[in-house]
Length: 411
Image 1 (cartoon, one colour):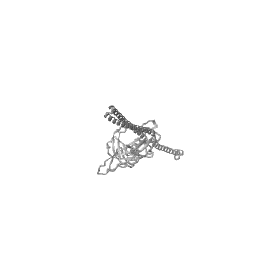
Image 2: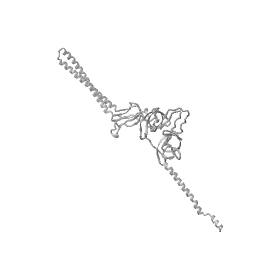
Image 3: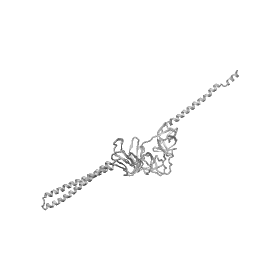
Image 4: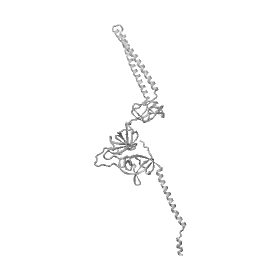
């Protein structure tokens, strides 16, 4: 019996084996489903939502000790110190518009003309009045000349006792009266002449001319529209024909944080880099520090002059300005910081690493960087190339591959 019991224990129960063999399969399937769901959620959460962000262009690191070093960097815009929206000085209908955007015009060049029939008629009337006044003046001059001759004869006859003294006095009174009339008529001629000049001015107002040389940046009206120096007639009346910008007056306006304004001085050398041309370095210098602060942004506006003029410079372009200090002699050479300069807020910690989010089309790529020294609100970052665009202040939820929408920042 003992041997039979032992043999019975050694028998394999097929039902039990099948039950235990199926359990790992179901557990594995459930684990795979959970992993797939987690991966899908990981992909959808950061990628389905488009983060609205601001971006900045990475700048090349500053030069070494043998050249001027940047003590501060700030961003701003190219502005025109001299620009004007040109309008007619009277209300009228446009008969010609002779400008197009991008066209260069010279001072005094005709930009547009207005309907001038009424002004021409008024000028002709004023000219006719002037001619009539001048004719009347000639008549008074002739009468006065005759009266003066009569006075001479009367005085001669009175001296010879051939006529009474009253005759000579009457002739003298006649001369004085006509002299006064002649002087009054001269004033009438002056009035008529002034009327002609006024009518001519009104006629000249029908021709719109360029006040200075520059480039047309906007064409605001078309032939047949009414223009006026005042906003009369609501939306049916234009107040301008076009906008002219003097490209020689272009300069830069930047906002410098209050805490760093002590690093900027008038006539201080600077270097400007346009966002559109990151490899083009433009020599510049500080014109003035505007003596007023913006309490909302805690910034002070600084005017910077461009020492090179170029057709690539356009109003309202974004620009980054590096304020420089004079190079100081040093006994040892100091290597420039590695990498590129990015806003300090662009460098964030992710999983124990310093990263920046570089813009790649409509998405971002997490880039591990090695932070370097700070230069004002910028910081050197090894692992980023100059000219790359990075996200300012990345949201906590942003991850590699996240979709973004770039904010269009106003001035």
